[in-house]
Amino acid sequence: MKFNSKLIHAGEIHDEFGSATVPIYQTSTFKFKNADHGAALFSGEEEGYIYTRIGNPTIRAFEQNIASLENGVDGIAVSSGMAAVTNVYMTILGAGSHVVSSASVYGPSRVVLEQDLVRFGIEATFVNASDLNAVREAIKPNTKLIYLETPANPTMEITDIVEVVKIAKEHNIVVAVDNTFASPVLQKPLDLGVDIVLHSITKFINGHADIVGGVIVAKEKEMYKKLRHTMVYMGNNMDPHQAFMVLRGVKTLAIRVERSQENAMKVAKYLEAHPKVSWIKYPGLKSHPQYDLIQKQMAGPGSMISFGLKGGLTAGKKLMDNVKMIILAVSLGGVESLIQHPASMTHAAVSKEGKEKAGISDDLVRFSCGIEDVEDIIADLDQALEKC
Ligand SMILES: *Cc1c(COP(=O)(O)O)cnc(C)c1O
Image 1: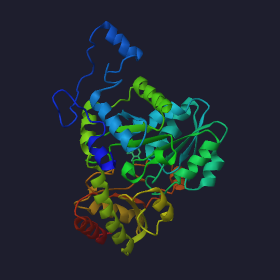
Image 2: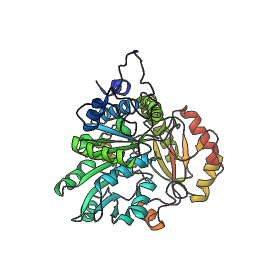
Image 3: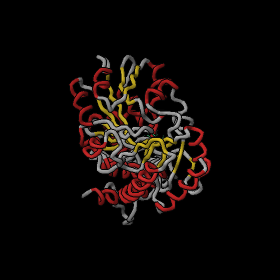
Image 4: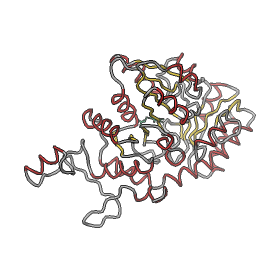
């Protein structure tokens, strides 16, 4: 199947009732046919379901759907995007190991390394991963993981995935990409040589701002098994209801992404020309410093825009306080347009120095463009900007 058909059909279940959609198997445990059957399931001699933390048909349908979209061997659904991030860290890193991470990443992905895993003897170096020399120089003999987010949250910086994979291969280092901002519609990191791709499905993949969830897809079976072990034993599994919701959401992923990026392009052009806007970073604008790399690596620019106002943070706050249809809220990638201020919100827990080095300036406003009529989005921004 091609991509749009996979969105609808990959992973689907053919049950005895002929259900057209994947039912919610809202059960914690599964009945064995007899004692030998139970033993065979546990030993792995037979395939089947035992207990929902280990596996569940609704969750499994989603895992196979997303693995197919990302061209991976298999997927592991987890309770949240952060569960996906920490699952990757816990699987690849251990006491005495080192990770090289994009400096500009989802706030908590960095906080976990800086404040939590450091207690377990795990060391992290944060680099501007769009600078390949910085990546190369950060590698140490004990580096086990290069962790990338591209486009990066919230700076919209782009990392050349193919080049980083080349560097990593020289040193036998695992590469993981948080593909939340692009979604598999616009970018397929596994095809570019990456070992692990992960998502906060709370964002584009589910797309309707009604559940939190995460998923990890591995390129190879061995890695998949290790990641799955972490999920099963650490217990950060998805719930069948979450899986049902996201199976419904993912069907429209491509049309939502296409429509929202069409809108975002128009909004970005509007903002770029606005006299009160001091700078804008949107992968669809020629003014983006990595415009050429974006053409090579991504199938489209997406719908996330970062910009600053001439009046700095004060003006940015006024903008956020005055939007009417656009929602002042964190999160992104949904059907509705959202606006927020990373320095005081999503990235508030990142150190001041960390924010400065990552380019998360105080005036940065992050906009997630929805699929409303673009005239309404622009009119809302316009009336709010007038007050800035
Ligand atoms: C939201 C987000 C996460 C974390 O996901 P949750 O579902 O909120 O736990 C991780 N990475 C990126 C890029 C995100 O936007």
